[in-house]
Image (tube, rainbow, N blue to C red; front, side, top):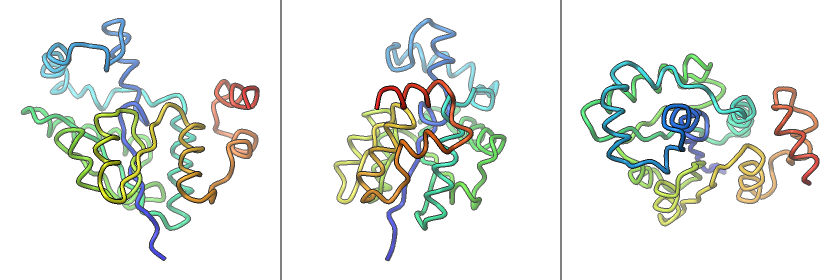
Length: 196
């Protein structure tokens, strides 16, 4: 039986782009004026900004989840958008370098391929499958395609619950994960255990 492909976004799922914008502007990426962001990216991207961004606080859990899904036969891909602007190729190259620096390489135990598209809505071209993404401008178009499902990422545990529901409860439960995965961030683990 063929297993559904699962696509993981980078910015806001694996990479803490919001922290960069919050540190720089005092606001989150999606709250900022898009023209201002793109004007700033035009100067920052060629300086390899995307190689220097920090991983999300739950990056290690997400990485282990990718490894687990791949071990169960799911094709696992990175599906990240860059910009249509002239520096989009620089961003794509830097994102690939960032992934490799974090130990995620193409055809590895964590994922099969890196796919970089020129805009969030273009992710819908890769349905059917499951897209783990934090942004509605990518998730909604993907879920409107035949066989496309969107897992709205807010944190590792919510993503795990949503994925488990879509995959027929074939993943370890959040409770198991919180108690057994050693790389889980202690703050998020404790929050999950006390909230559930």
